[in-house]
Image (cartoon, rainbow, N blue to C red; front, side, top):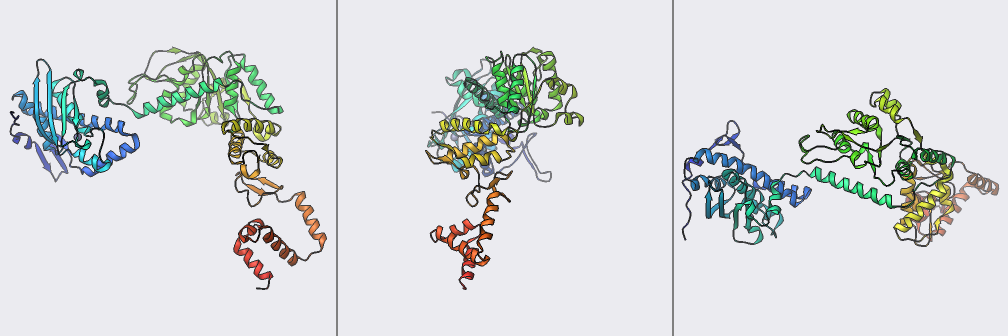
Length: 558
Ligand SMILES: [Zn+2]
């Protein structure tokens, strides 16, 4: 067997210059850097932890590829006039000089004229394998990702066509050496699978695509749910519902007003389902949930190459909602540039994707919603007045939950039925005491808050039993009694003056029991009811255990 010999590497070693004074290292005119492999190992670990193995592999492969391309340029400059083999060996020799890996050629056949290439190399002392094994132990698959990227990038740039290298053995998998084989992409059977790692791929695009899919599925699922889920019979509710019903028969844009959590999206959905567009899509977006620099591309779509990172064309929400209804929640948060485009949709029924000059006609009903004063926003210059007037043609005020107390029992019943099905639980219902507390509460978070609370109650209530106060509200144990109110924070608090307290005071004062005696009897009774458990008795009395102990001692003369 003939071994392939490298040419002497003096010409390459001379390219390396350390310029300590300038804080620079050079390989010819490329700036290099000495780095700790352990630091690179930490980076690798972080990457794998945050974006997963596949994306990390892609990033590192592409990084290696870029380095390989640089070194191929160098090879042509330094050894361009030598034999093809000697010129090609610049790559493997630089890979060694750069401290990456020891490379031994096993087989090399290359021809510029025909573009033919076949190469096999043995790798020893791969830094990447060492670092990977240190962090992750043995692997099922080869791990020298950036090095494979380098070999592929170098050879592709050298040969002028895509030569794909594959690691067929790797020390990380238990082999004695790493071994790589390279040939033109088309000659690999699994070309597509491997070429994938050389293509850029933005995580963000993936995430946005996934979110679109989720939105779409959610829409489809909720559209399958038969009846609109609006529940209510109070005057305020009926008035709003009536306005929705009348808007449904027309094409008018609707502006839904009301506090957060009043169910604006549900009203929008109902409007959609009552309209002739009900077979079309319903697309909901919260304008406040999107970062400013993404909102336009999200709403109106983007053409490939419109900006860095736009690697593929993507359709926007408006196109997705074509033939249906788009619901823009928190419209007040829309940036001014997007407001101008929205106005164009409303006036002309036209959109342009970002980076595109094609005008697309769309047919979408816009339902916007806000919980802020848009007029104020117009005054402050944050909202276009022309857009405001356009949207405010048909405003519908959705009442807050505390303004429709009459609907609470109906709502609670509907929610109970839904959550009991969801959690496969049978319950008797909400106890009267609890319903009373629910009606008294101010519900700053409106229906959404009530819904969350009922869900919690369904989870916490004993199977076959009632939902009680302590299943709904936190911090209820100490103070549960009839005369409680729930604070805006959702905690139960004693109601200061109540008829119950008043009659209790009447009884005590009428009894003529001295104060000291009264305290003593109260303490004894609490301890008796708690079966002698002082901690529990103290809780009933609303004091701490040491306080109770102190008082007991004092009364017994201790
Ligand atoms: Zn390897």
